[in-house]
Image 1 (cartoon, rainbow, N blue to C red):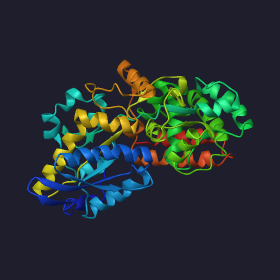
Image 2: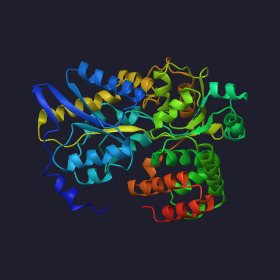
Image 3: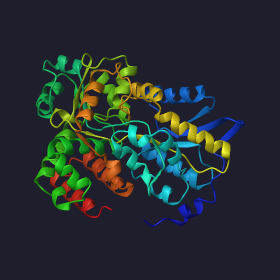
Length: 413
């Protein structure tokens, strides 16, 4: 990979990022993009645990999601104003920063905590590892492979709550007749791209998904399995035509209030249902794999730590890395976030019905690597741009979109 001049120069610019307040107590600025109600409740658990340990979490939330936050974080690091820690999705997003030598080596923490023995699936830790060194601390397993349904919306429409994607599509006219939006969808590109990925796994199947995303097989991307996915995406586009919201959590709120029948969104949506006081299986229904193909992709969030010349800051960074993987923090954080813990040796008796379904799928081994682990940021951006254009322009046919998608896959690195 070629590094820009700016990246190569960054190693000389790493500086503060935190303020030392005492020999063993440090204020550490932590940047992330968790700003919705459910996300804020979850990140508060991390801050509470870090503060209780004797250090201080200085919250640096950036609104707008990862596409907005990541360039800001990178700019600060390269500009010599790094934070103490920052959230990325574990995968390929930090490749250039790692190669530039501006991120902290966490190998000693990982070895002391036996991360290789306790973290599951091991692909999460592998995604943090470059040339045998660990550069990030995974905090959860997030899967895109979910659909969330409003029990109230279907009751109002007089039709049963669907059990799979085909039943959902068939129920759309009844929902519209009852004044409901069949499918809630925000306008950010990552939302339409993520929903497309869910449909790809459910409809094209695991082998086709891996052929395209892992092996970069243009023929499969242009073939009949993915033609069915693009036809489903065209149906979804029509069902979401009146979903006039921007952010993902606004779309989730349409489901919570019964204004929309369903939403394709990752398991982080559960945090919003929890904040609204709704109960899985009573107020809302979850369909892993769209009720068609119950496989979870295993992406998620991880924290990275910029290199710092102050040994007290470095020590605090290592303390936070260890804390994030600890059993107590894993339980408290993931119950609020709606995600699954990265370790199997924790007590999740308090998990709701949907989380228990996810845990059962995880235990069965029906898992896939996530797109962030398989696709470079450049390729992911191209797909995002295509999907938001397709989603917002009905004049783009499924066939035209598929041809452009196949070309992106053919050129993917």
